[in-house]
Image 1 (tube, each protein chain N blue to C red):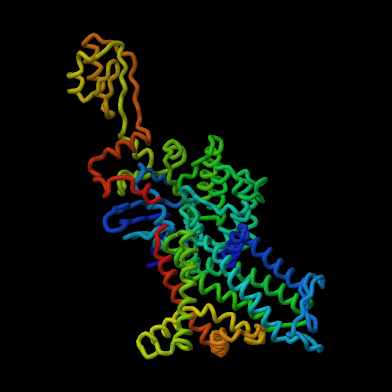
Image 2 (tube, chains in turn blue, orange):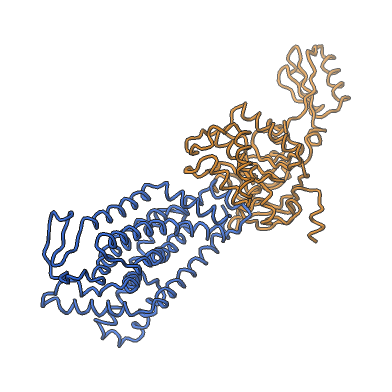
Length: 310
Length: 323
């Protein structure tokens, strides 16, 4: 009963913000844009056939290649719109949930109820995730339906992108609430979460570069190990898209990108190797180690929240 | 042990409650307060005395540095007993996106009130607080007085055995204040213990059975209103002409002289008659003699000036800075 009340309250607060409706509008607009595009053998049509573009990618008269469509949906649409824009908007939308809740006069009534502080914290945290679960469900369901109905490609594995996006967001949201508990500031929560997200991405990219490009750095064992260890510790935010692609049966990126120019071939091959390595990662490792980071950070934030005077 | 504490007659029994912020800011310095079950108890004191800190400690909003005692027979901070305790904080700030009904339902759900009872209580309390028409309106449309009445309703949603109200009449008009007083008396008649924290001494005087005066983090006075005012009386003597000429003689008898007004502290009638004899002996006619009983305000002012209570460190303004 108490958790449900906290979840509903968090959701109501999120719904009260304009950004909630903005995210819904974006989801509908993306689905609408997808509806306007059609794939036919040898060509892609736009605006329901008003404009056509000939292509060699879709020549199979028996139908479209499912893995290419999955690649377009997951890599091109879900990753860009939901994984980056959506998660950024969600960080902004939810960053105020804890600071507003912890305002003097507001928190007093809540913490005086017969519920442990850590439970209050957890309930509020889950409320923020419920908001993202709702938005991710709307987006994925709409795009899933459009891909199925309009393009004739049903991607049941793509539905698993819903929990994956919530997981990705949760890795960042735990940072946001920890900052909020310490500073009680929405602006600080947004800025520091974005900085931390960039640093997570930076650590993963650095590890890829050391592993695949600047292999001579591996001779510096301590540096190499440190980078590897850092990658193990931080949430694998970049890898969530790869898991979504794997589970939805998407084709590797090189199958639907144009052939590179000769001078770009080295970079192209490097990207393909990194992509292949990431696709080969065990999801249990990727998700498990990321969740460990999240749980540790949440326990620290809960401990701090439980000891606070309001 | 639990069985013994459950049997206590005190609704609130606070022993040696201390709160130090940081290393040196002493907000409470060993507060002892007892509130009987089913009585209305008033806590008063100047700004920065530690009243709100004490209330927040009782409601687990603030962690005490040291505290013993019980609330409703259970140790201070016992979560289970919070289920039967209602609380209205000072300067509350309720979520603006909720309607009046949703707000009552939300807080009552956190207090583990079953759904059916929540609905029933919300309806009854909204009606009692004259808010039925506003039940489904977002509270950011409410006036300050309406928010205060909603806050009081919120504190009563769990049918509490103990209600702690911090400045309950803040923002209410005179009619609203009278309504709250009547509500408090109704609650007392039903056996609810009420702990009031208010600056409005006249309000407290009208409803409280017992009061405590907190000064600089310590209880300066505590008791029933009659106990506190029993030996606190003075006489105001109005003369027909100026008594400055005999000022020294009057002051030697313990009286204070200000032109035609003479004030004699204490309820010693022999001394009163001696003063009157002296005045009349000097040929000054007495126009009126009025006995003046101390009000709560007089007692508070006297307690604030009590040199036996050393100032807390830093001296004052602590609570405002906390805000």
